[in-house]
Length: 384
Image 1 (cartoon, rainbow, N blue to C red):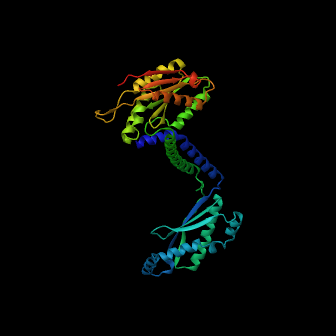
Image 2: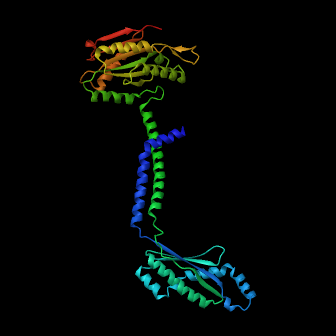
Image 3: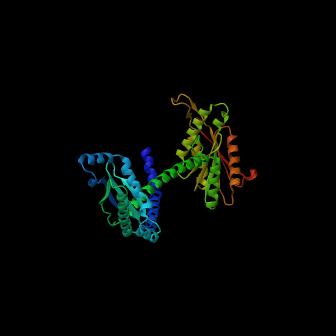
């Protein structure tokens, strides 16, 4: 079930996922295009004892043992990274003025070694090499003069970078594409959940929860649509009063009442065409709109429905108890210039007349709905 929900969400919201991925990728490429490139170069330095100052191998070994203390290597790291040392160089000051001090210098210690790594980043590949070499030259001269016991020597010269370290358009675009896809997937699921919520709310206002047919409000709206959209069309409307249910409305337990009413409504929908409209009109009343139904076909159509709905309805699953709905039907048909109010008034008059008959009856009231001129056709159903 969850997998089907996931597939349905992808089917309905694929365009959200595609749009989100496209927007994220486009934004990433635009940012990469307008962002100035940053180049990086690195140099490595090694700290070692100055062998020329020691007269014996024991003193040299002792110096190496002292060098294992992290404080010595970290002191050298801080000295190399300190701008107060390398900014004394006229060459570096000139470069800073040219590029507005737009380069970064960092120094790290390679774990478990006495090797330091100097990293310089900037907008120009040539200048980062020049800065790295100038820093190394000035720092080496200053530190070796300051502390002659240990020698700081260059292990690896800085190399000219061939490509910027950032931005990386392709990598950024792939990450943005994946991120946009995830955002789109979240939006698609959120949209699906919101749509389901709205559908449930809409269904509550449109579908009657007991009978699963339209509510009276929506039924009247459909009736108005039939009149306004097809003013010259022929259609009939009828109200089915389940007199047997109406008489026990306040006596029959609500679950049994609802079960019988739901069964009758289900029978009614099965007997009608797919385009016919069924709604709940009252507590024990159903309403029907028969589109494209000529005047001569109205009475036979509702007679057939009355006989079919008059069959007893089982109250329990065993079938020992049954209930007679005793349907009485009032119907009329649309003529030009009829309004919703006139149609409803006419069909309600017809169902009232049908319900007043001693047996289940179909009453078709023809316009105009004036008592002296009305023509009432009634047919008695066969009692079950």
